[in-house]
Image (cartoon, rainbow, N blue to C red):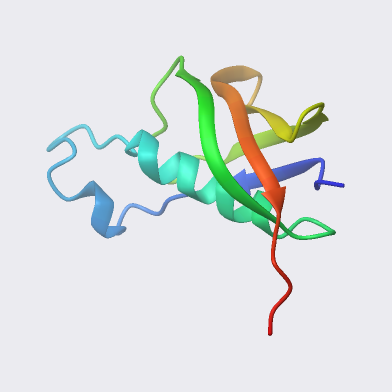
Length: 104
């Protein structure tokens, strides 16, 4: 069972923003996806993200914005996601997951 939501927030002093883009910083999509994947990996039972078969960025995320991400279990080892800032959808897609190996 995945959590039903998570929040992604990248502060203005994050290293990923250096040069991305001067005067108009935008959070790189790979950082957004990594944070969503990290939240999903904390599911109960734990899962491991093994792929991102689909991701569509509709609007850029700016530093300091809270991206509220709704997560939905889907069949065949996938988890859907949709991230919004306020009422505006910024990103949506799907993560492919498998059960995580228990820690030794």
